[in-house]
Structures are given as structure tokens and as C-alpha cells.
Length: 511
Image (cartoon, rainbow, N blue to C red):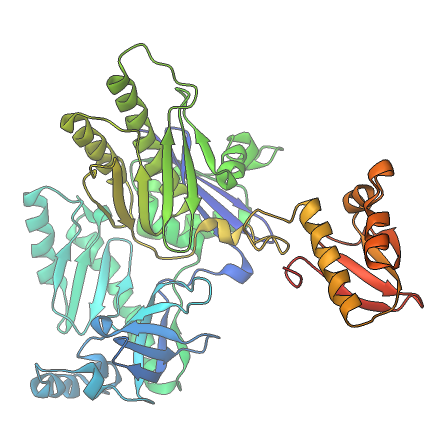
């Protein structure tokens, strides 16, 4: 499988795509108003402790308080504020094993937290007090002794080697997680990475003791640098960048952490936009489509809702040459592959329910489940997939870290509020009539002018079946209909005989 990374940078935003076999599987978008927050560390102040919600709301200086669940509060949260290692050791000796968040954490306490999920809609970001500092090969964990190895490193021999190195180089009072990219690396590479992280941590410690809360203690890398850190491994064939400034930034970082990969970073010199050249733009444009077609003629319908994301699999134009069971299996297997790609591309999070085409044989149901699991194994986000139910449904969850990438590129329509629906012409006319009825019940002026959109104007003045005249006779009023191009679908305005606006009415106020 070939992999490459393409980076498009403009004054307004940076877009990065990861491709596998020339198909876009992940998209990252960063703009000034949508800066990456995951990984940032704050010295916060406890605002409220709510035992009923098992939550601690923490002021970190954002518009909305951060959400800290009881399970994410480390019993050693006070250790970050100790001035010396000796104090740390004494505090650990005195620490009680029956630590209680409700009892020990009070309003106004300072607490060090790290963002693990970005704000979504009206919810503030989610944070944890278990602090980690990520590097290229290792993740440093202050005030811990745990040593972990990435699950994606499957060789037991390699896992033991890396664990032995970690124990040798790890300073007291620190834990470590060995990342996947550390596989095959020497102790020198790991030690160099760890020493850089220690320098970063010492600078953070100074800020923790000197800055008032709430304040930012550590800002993680920019999106471009963090993507290179996490995704640019030896199996990536090439990184293309269309900005000399970003090329210099990325090359400097790669030259320091993985000099053997520098030759894979190149500047795109073409005249046409980089995403057009690599045929990436059309795939991004289709991200808003609810219907996604397969090469064999089948398709899926994707409907995100507040509670879950529903995906329906359909045979579409696929006819097939075998029996119904075999045809259904073929479409479902293709759907499983496409669903996994779309989940990564659109960055789905939370509960996902997939309605596959019914298959009768238990073996075929298992094949679909295994195919879905195999495809999601390529995903960096944590996923949990249940077996297919007797109704042909598969329920799964995918880790939500940030809002869906679509929300950083598009905003809900102000007219339909994201529903995709606006009032029909007849509905708008019915609302106009209801307004007239209410107005006449208050003995209002008998002469009014109603400003409407072009479509409603034509509908009300439709020759033989002139609905304006019907309204005039029915309510015994003189009604003028005026075409107004400034109005949106479903809106109308009403003026009295002196051309004074009575009120502006839209589809929400008259529903």
C-alpha cells in the first residue's frame, strides 16, 4: 500500500490530506479561528464540583469551562505544584489510597489539566489531570512510573527490547509510553527524544510555579508539525508541500527527529493548485454528499444526527450474476471498506449504526463484521465494533477528539438551521394568511402592502386563480403584493398605507 501526505497552505487555512493508494483517507484543516487544541496544557482553577454529574468544571480561560470527569482526576494532581522533588516524595508517602475527588477537590483549587477533546457545539473541551508530553518516539508522563508500549508493535522480542531501554534511560518520578514509530530505533534515538521532552517539561514547571491560573502552560505543535510527527513514518513514500515557509518548518523538524526521511519532503512547483494536481479537491468537495457511490454500483447514505451517525447500505445499480445472498455479501463487503474510509475522512465520532443489506447465513454476517474490523484497524482513533444483530445492524463507536472536519469548512445554513429544508410556497402563503387573520382580529389597517419573494409573488398573482384577490375578498382588505429581492425563502414583510413597516415576518416567527 502506497501512502503520501499532501499539504496545501494559504493565508487563511492549512489543509493536509493523507492518501492511501491514491485515495484520501484523512483530512486535517486548521484556520486561525479553528486552532488545534488537543494536547494543550493549562493551569486551571476549579469552578464547580458536581458529584451528581461526576464532573469538575474547570476555568482554563476559555469562554466555556472545561469538563473534567472524576475518572480523569489523578490522585497526585497536587504534586505538580510542589517546589521540590523532596516535597513530592513526602506527599506521595502521605497520599491516601482512599482519595476522593468530591472530598479533596474544592472550588478555587488550582489544577493542571490537558485537553483531550476539543469543544463541540455548546460543550466546552474535555480535559484530564493525567499530563503527558508527546515526542516523536516516546510520550513522557510526569509523576508516574508506568512504562507502556504501543499495541501496534506486535513482536514480543521488540517490545521487551524497548521496555528494557525505557527502564535504563527513564529518570526518577517519570513514566513513559513507547510510540509505534519507535519500533527498530536505537537507545540513542529514544534517549535523545526523551531528553528533549525533559527540557520542555522543566520549562513548563517554571510556568506552573510562577503563572497565575487560568493560564496556558504548554501549547502543542501546530497541526502541520503534529501530523508530520504522528503520521510521517518510513512507509510514507512522499510529502508534498506548496508553501516554502511550511517546507522549511517541516524540513527543520524532520532533519532533527528523523534525518533519514528528509529526502521524502519536497516542494510542489506546479502552476495549478496542489490539490487539483493530485485530484484531491473533488474528493473533498464530495464530503458534504449524503450519498456515496461504490465502483460496483452500490451506495451508502450517511446521516449524522445529534445522538448518532446512521449509515444505510443499498444495492443501487448493482445487479450481480449470482444469487441474492452472494450479491448482498459483495455489496456489504464493499460498503464496509468505504464506511471505514469515510469515517476517517469525515472524522466521525461517537455512536455509529450501520444498516447492511440483509444476509441470512451466519458465516456471511461474520465476514462482514471481520471486514469492517480489518478496515478500522488502519484507523488511529479507538473504535469498538459489535457483532451484527439479527436485524442486520452493526453498532460501533469511534473515539471523538475534535468536531467533525466538515464543521471547520462549512457552517449551518442560517435559513434552514442545517436541516436542509425551507418552507414551500404554499406554506409561506398559508403563514401570510394566518398573519392577516391575526392582524384583522386586532382591527388593524385595511390597507397593507406585503413584500414577498419572486416565487411567492408569481404564486399570489397567478391570473385566473388570483390568490391575492381571494385574500382581499375574504378579509375585506386592500392588499398590494410587492416583489422584494432582499427577502430570503419563507420571509415576508408587511407595510401599512403610510409605507411604515408593521413587522418583518419569517418562517420561524409565524410557524
